[in-house]
Image 1 (cartoon, rainbow, N blue to C red):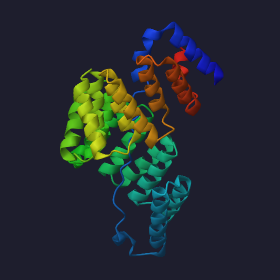
Image 2 (image 1 turned 120 degrees about the vertical axis):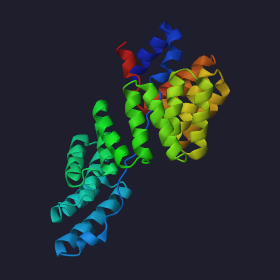
Image 3 (image 1 turned 60 degrees about the vertical axis):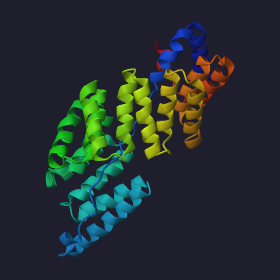
Image 4 (image 1 turned 180 degrees about the vertical axis):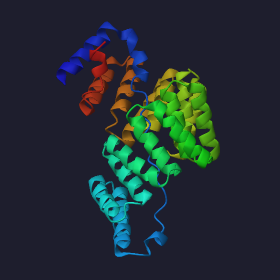
Length: 298
């Protein structure tokens, strides 16, 4: 880690003019929330003990999943499937738990099994798309989102995730339209406000971007990365004191947000507070030793 810090210090000393451009390198990591169907209806369990056992294990899997006990959830969903393999929601639940464990390939297989049983289930289509996104198969996500939207045009989560994939593909105009559609359907969901704000930021429409990030913060003031984005935008507008306040808010919510520490350091550097900036860069490295790996390859 000391070597990484020393390389970074050398980079700053030799290339001070490059520091502002680093703001977007660690700009935003939008979490893609899983969407899942409603609880299983009891009607399909009226015939046998096996189906009763499947329902019991499914409920157990749901409970473990909600408590973020993903390995236990996987075991429960698999036992449910073993008793009654034709329940698409159990396969979907298994996929969700595997996704949260970072097992994206296995999650996709589980979603495929769910879709074999219920081919047009919007939530499962979106979940598979999210897992494919994590594998950077952005083009492959779009038909899934479109199919989910065709099935349920008011499914805002499908529109939002479509916008995310289009953003990754640099199809910004289409992404903007997708985010706007999601906002129109569900204005109380902050993620779409952030998605639109991000596109405005990268197109250097800073005042407009700030409006959307601020709206997201009003909808949900307890997300660290919303305040991180507000700080980045404030920095771009030259409002350094307000940027520091926003980064501090992000850090208050999540002290381990290395990106917020990094972006705060950028702003301190822009303010000419070089010693404080370096201490803050070091804090980012302490939290995430890999955060500046990209600089070592430049």
